[in-house]
Image (cartoon, rainbow, N blue to C red; front, side):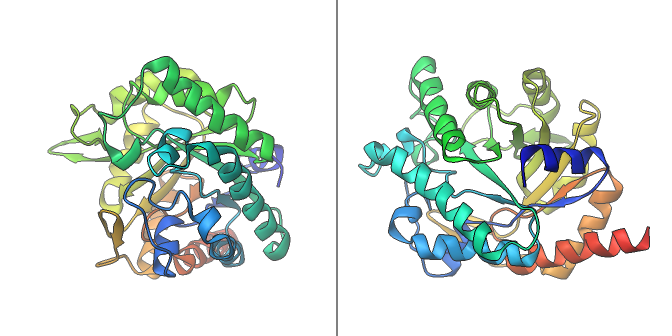
Length: 307
């Protein structure tokens, strides 16, 4: 699916399905996670499994699949001594997604290139000076664009210090950009999901990032219980397309704990509420599986039949 096609679908009021968790699904299938880059090197060490996960999400009904490049910037890969492999990792990740699309898709499917500002080991003391940091994001964004992704999906943007740099790098590619924000509840406030840094309200974060002109705002890598309230905050400041792909379970570094992961049928029921609240893109993040994506696909198809 070209970028124009998915944008036209959203403009026409259609609901699109995003895939589910990649790193956690790789872990569930036996791929070891790394404390520094999590699943970032799996495209080199376990490419067959990465492709199979993409294929399974497509067959489950995903309209958009996201490359396994969340933890693949030069800075992240340098943490495991593979910084010089950054080009190979990005090109391989996109190629695996493209191969999966060619093998499994019987309809248009877009490929989103994942880019995150998360530092190695999620240690916020590890960020380099701003100009070097910007060059890191520029490199990854351009590698994704050159390899043929349809859009850049910025994921788990946490802080207003670093997120604008990633936004700038992504926009410079000329591709559509999805802004993925993670949030949680702090008393009566919805705040950005941050580690060991002062909390910033989701509203204030959006005020800092929306002037950079994303094409879609996604609430992602956030607990299901906070999604509805976060949607309400987003819609006070943003009139464009909104997406939701929550997590379920919890992170116990370097692995995901699948205890209490929401059943697919329950996620589908929640999705009806999010669609009623205006969400046009639905998917899953950490902990979700092809079964969850299939349930979301069925929910959207049922909604379309009822109309």
